[in-house]
Length: 293
Image (tube, rainbow, N blue to C red; front, side, top):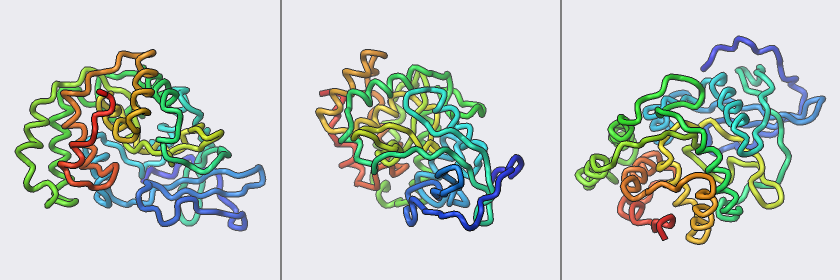
C-alpha cells in the first residue's frame, strides 16, 4: 500500500456510508459512497493484499506492472484518463483516513444503473475508443509514468505471464493446449504501437446517463498495451452488428488494424486473465471474429 503522506482529511464516523460493491470479488477495490456535508463523495481502497488473489490481478501485475493497492498510482490513473477527455472522469479530491486505513476520495457522479455494453451506442463507443487510441506510446506498461517495456517484448512477456497465471488458476484447462498456445504467441508479429486501455472494460466501469456510458469511474486496471489487444477485447464484448458500427466509427479517426495475426495470442492472454470468466479454450478461441465480418 502506498504511504499515507498527504492525507489531510478524516471521514466523520457519523456520516451515512453505503458500500457500492459489497461482496463483488471481481472488483479491485472497495467502493463507498459517503454523504458529506458538501454532498456525496466516493471513497476507494484496494481489497486485495497480494496479486495472487485472482488470475486477473496476478496477470495485470506480472505483465503490465499495475498495482491497484497503491492509491497514489490509482489517483494518477484517474488524472490520466481525465486528461484524455474521451469520457467524463471523476475529479480526484485527495486522500483520507477511513475505517482504519487510507482511501482515495473522488467526486461523485450521479447517473443511472450500469447496463451491458451491448446496450450502448456502439458507433459512439468506437469513436471514443479511437480518441483514446490516438494517444500512442512506444512501450507497454502502466499509464501513470512508470518505465515502459519495449513492444518487441510484448508477446514473449505475455506468454510468460500466461504460463505463470495458468499454473495458479485452472491449470487443467490449459494442460492439453500448450503446443498450440506457444505456437500462437510465436507466430504473432511484434506490435508497433501501445495505447491506453482498460483490461476489464465492462458496463459497470461507467456511470450511465440517457441509456449511454457517460462517465468512466473505475480505472485501476488500465495500461498502455497494443491496440490489437484492446480491440480483441471489444470484439468479444459486442455483438455482430455492434462490432461493425464500432469499427466503422473507429475508422473515421484511425485506421482499423488487422487483428488476424494477433487474435489468437490476444484472446489467450485475455482468457488467462479471465476477463470474461473461464470458458474452455477451444470455445473461447472460436468466438466469432465480429470485426472481420
